[in-house]
Image (cartoon, rainbow, N blue to C red; front, side, top):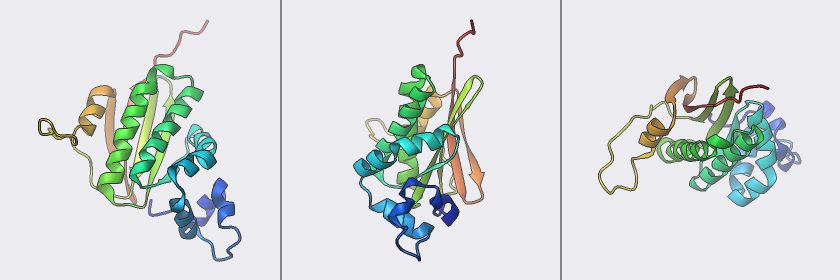
Length: 182
């Protein structure tokens, strides 16, 4: 999660941003991506990001507060494409909570977003470079922060965190009500 490698970046649609520089690498490409505004990122990358997520690959985003909205839009687009309309609201809200936590508490340069659909289940995972695991806390009454993981606990079927070689993945699962075939 420290950054993209050359091979990972080469398939990214923004690879041409660094193509003129023969010394370009994943670090240069990440710096290029970090300079994009959220609006530019959405305009240039949303379709590609949705395709990557739909293929259950990780989408890497710069770790900036204003990109929480981009992560939420990606999840909405994928859930609409997968025709999981009953999960739109919870999926968007919980993705926003996990993404905001990753941006606020981990200090890494990037976060990863993954969606996976299995029979009866949807899993959304946000990856970051920290190995510190999330925990449920009781927020002070009237506090504007500290409620995120309680929302995840309340609205998801289940949630958890997995340690990775370079960081962790925090995920939630929602039950997919499959339609009876006819």
